[in-house]
Length: 116
Image (cartoon, rainbow, N blue to C red; front, side):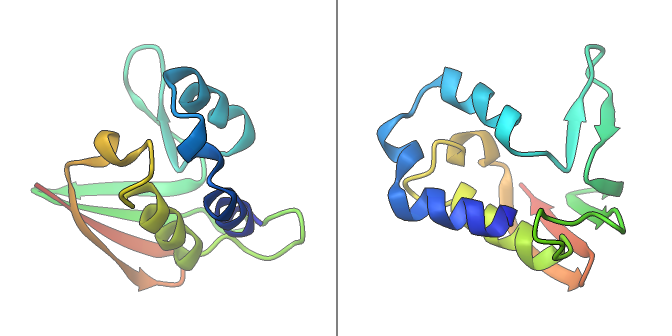
């Protein structure tokens, strides 16, 4: 469902027309994150089971049992689709993710992100 929501957002170019810090903040009310930072800037796992940092590599394992409202599971493919949009030239998130050099699917529930 999230994949479908992001695709719908991208197709309608909602974020392209309404770029603002407020809209980026409000999106957290609509979409869940893999991880977030608490008030002490410590990572809190949301949809991610674990995050492993090794130099400039970041391996993310998605929690099992997470599903969309249509009961389809959240997979690495969904995360990749969202990263594709977030790093596209028209995305308001692109600047915030500028340290990402690349990313790939390791397994159905694992993603590897390469950083600068």
